[in-house]
Length: 203
Image (cartoon, rainbow, N blue to C red; front, side, top):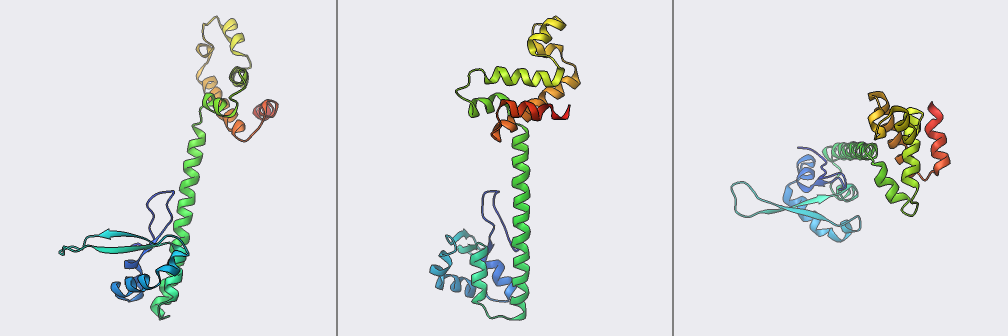
């Protein structure tokens, strides 16, 4: 049995009355009664949540309380401080810390993935809705970074109808990378000159 659970990245980690009972040597009913008796105090640390679970072989379901870290910590202080309870306290603290680290890493990975797939046109529309020249300017900047020429210069030099037709695979990758960088710089509040300087800094 896990000590700490979470349902989604936005949800708060929790433990249950079942976990507390099993790992402290107390009966589940005793722990549940203790929770009910101290419900007002527990609610000071957040809404006391629960799920209704079916008991195998019985028709009557039971209420399984879900306690966040502060609620669980407070509840454990109400139990007798036996060696088993003391060990569980330490294990629970470590489990909550580990879960929070796991959640933080998952949130970071999701954010990085989301930011890595930002669409430049959508970003410009969101960040610079009143600048009718923004897309054209940043589009040209991306091409200039990728190829050394503007889209207009590319079409004329290469004799193509669309600038992307003149790009080789390396230039296509550089173009996409430039668009991603520009979008991120825009989200960070940089203006055109700052973005241009940062974009060309590694050339």
